[in-house]
Image 1 (cartoon, rainbow, N blue to C red):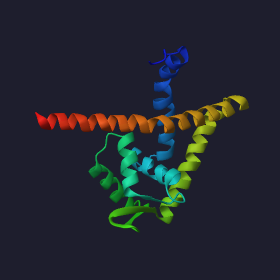
Image 2: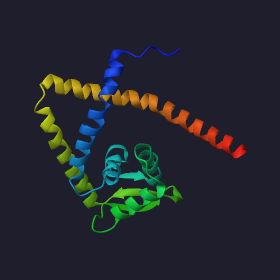
Image 3: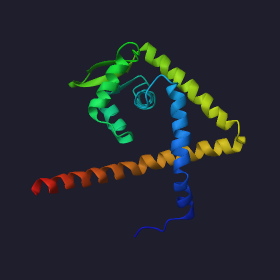
Length: 178
């Protein structure tokens, strides 16, 4: 039996729009700096946060994450990666994966590493404009809260994803039997 929905859960949902769209997109725009697309920023941030040493990640991992976050097809991811690997951006090298000839490894170039440094600096400056308007305790509590929520999402999201995948597979099978 599901537990009743608390007032806190209701208020939390009401904050979805301002947090996701106003704050999230605001930070994303600061990271973009008018130079990169949202997909390109997400790819670079993924490399920074989940890549090996913050510099390298498998193309398959990029695809898995980006398709979860955006309504984007594999071909669009390939196009974004190719654009990022060529001049004038030259942010990435796309290499053969060390353990699989079929898989690709995406590695930051020196220019890509500098671009991530620029993104981090711009993101911190944007967030500082918000932190400047908070008491130190509010800022600390906000960081703690967001860290906890992120950890909780990491715990529950695989269940949600696998449940959705199971339902999608079942739906395909049912459709193919018709």
